[in-house]
Image 1: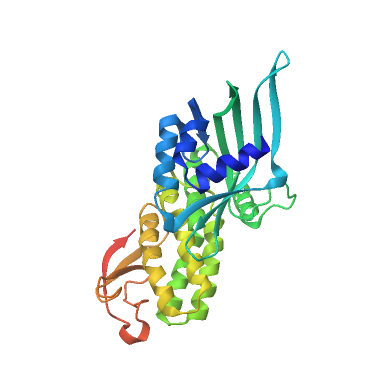
Image 2 (image 1 turned 180 degrees about the vertical axis):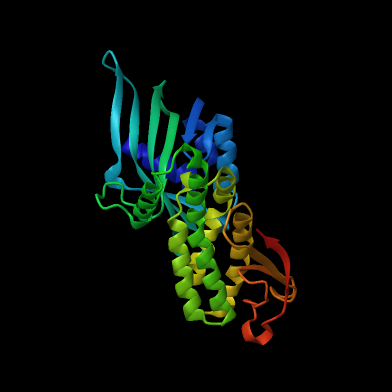
Length: 314
């Protein structure tokens, strides 16, 4: 069964062999995901095609933590009829000719049934998703989790009448660091400082990895699952280079996804969505700012005030 896990994920998830996947999943498959809900067999196949196998230039990849895998046989009066697998796996985004970007880690449980000599996947549980680098067995609490727990404890003296505002403050804290680090990256590009932009992108990536999805509002969760991977990819690519031109290309798509997220997030101060028609080879490009005054991150001092505010987000 350990070999079965390796073959199953390599062929179905990493290589997108849909013919193989169709044959090895049970007709009554149920897939439970702690962030994406419940899926039946048809849902699972469709979502695999759409979310896992549709874009070879940004391909999700799954890698097992070998030492975590456990297998428990299932018997009925001494006759083997199935097996349970459990373990930890890590997820990455793979782009051509680039290092894989680690996006998350999670626990899993698989229930396999042995029918007519064939192993069929009957139930899947994918749960306890964490930021990359999280150590499930570590006794030391990650700083991002620790800070949230301390913040939560500080609000425990409030009575039930204040529960909802407290939750809102927790939600705001989750993304506040993300937006602040984005703005710092923007300011570095305004200065045309590739070294500083790389460092700020690294800080943004850490902030993204520290977000706990279960503490986001429903509206934020809906957008987060759509933009999370691309936000991390763009932040990582900006971090990897000191070339301001290449950084600005990635900042364009980073800003588009960040705009979707900030639109549904409750923040203490307004943000300004701004546009330069000359950027991106004349196609135009957007960015977010904490100031209404234009400071163009795509041209810096060459055309510092090129652009205008197109939307105020409050």
